[in-house]
Length: 146
Image (cartoon, rainbow, N blue to C red):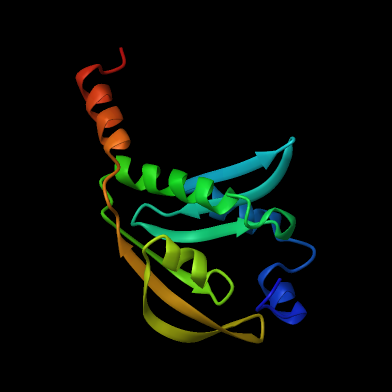
């Protein structure tokens, strides 16, 4: 992955993974998975306050629309909950994608994870309402489930 060193990748995704920690983390908020030919190629998570906690695309599937699909799902999830502002801590590698999605850098920071130091960016954007999502919400409100 451009912009990340092997030691940084190992710090973010240690082997073996801590499955109980992942289960607890993914059990809250909105979690989305993108598949191609029955293979998971990306995933994303957003917490109820509009913080995008995870947005990952497998390197072999980058620049193929996976991040855009996941981001669209994140935005729809947030809109349905009345969230009007998104925020994330973004890697150097992911910064161009987030900028193309309308995010702006609020702060550059240096963070430590398992003894390894990283530069990243706190980025945010107002969430622009999607007319399709608003129409779906209006339809659900006028036709409640019985």
